[in-house]
Length: 92
Image (cartoon, rainbow, N blue to C red; front, side):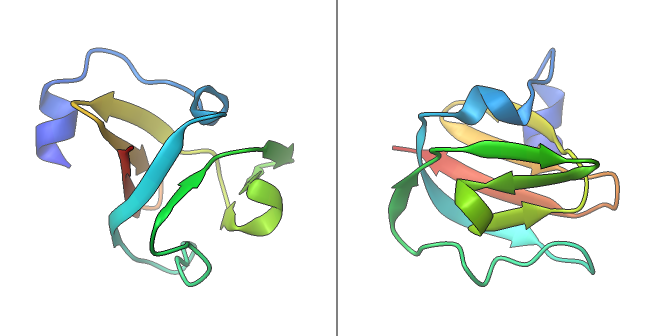
């Protein structure tokens, strides 16, 4: 995480990931983040829906309890949550 944060000047919103082809890289788990349904191979982010504080990607493939800060550097996407949890993708 420190590498991504140290070289990132501004953050993006989750909606800016729409249409991106990504692959799961790693995560820092916690109570509110589950990666059980994330495909092992590459997949495209096709939809982002907000329901109050909850953010849902690809019709339930990934469900987040709150909107993360999204940072990208060198083909690596970091989703950083207020709870301290982190989810990392690599763009394809």
